[in-house]
Length: 386
Image 1 (cartoon, rainbow, N blue to C red):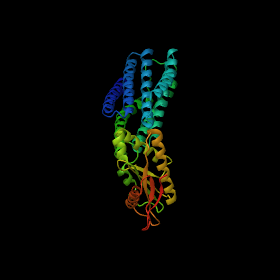
Image 2 (image 1 turned 90 degrees about the vertical axis):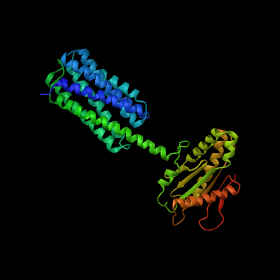
Image 3 (image 1 turned 90 degrees about the horizontal axis):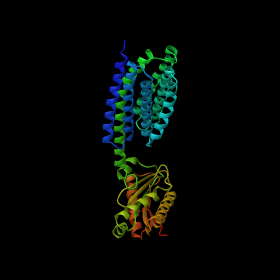
Image 4 (image 1 turned 60 degrees about the horizontal axis):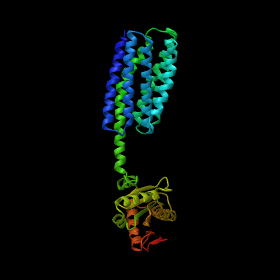
């Protein structure tokens, strides 16, 4: 009862409009290159549907071959797009490999006149490509769980619908057919595709919006020069009281204004980046490192004893001296103030305030040293200047 050509036209228009929408979305958000790859895939599928429509009216090997070649190339682009979304890598090698392998397996039987086998292999190749797309989104589920899992499920469902098409074309039509095979699996699969196209388009757009929002949040919480947390991110991450054995360290690059005035702001930025590099080296997995001012950095070390925190702070100070000498050719130093939360624990604000006072003492004592804030009222201890 279904008009096959009308169903194909519906798929063609749906994918064509979808490609326009995806291309427009990519134009407004160039960072999401997977949208462009997906748009190219949709265009190829739309054109392939046009040749399938021609083949339905005037069956011919050339129309069928072009239709399957473009369909598989389009699905390969969708596979590359999914991998690009997940991994952030160039998709073209995957696309080329998938297109060549699936296209060769499908078109070889057609060259020898076995159109039924070509249909069966083409349907199986489409199913495999759709399963690969589904797998990529399944692997990317941590990025946006509900959206990626729904996309993975839709691609899996459409891929499964191609399997009975492959079986029935051989069982019912044989190894040579004239025109597209017609059976319940063919109609069911096409109806699923018609329903899935707008859903997948909307979900892909939503995925792009989610990723953009996540990127904006990361940018709002990250220092662009060093890649470390900024002040806001640090305090957001440590709103609760730290464990009793926690420690906080504040670092300050000594005489930084002189570096800027003498060597220029570009060199000043390089020195800041080198300090961040020293700070990131051997950083414990549970530590939080942030740039909280121009040349001021903070380090929160949960579950760290005072002696271990002191050794870590001095190691950062010494490493920075070496990096600045080797990579920038400057005799740079840094001072640090360290505060521990003590047996009863104190808030991060209080711990950083104590570390700030210890940093002031380090500066006043001659710089290039680490000073530890006392837990009780007493003179601050220090290490460094050598």
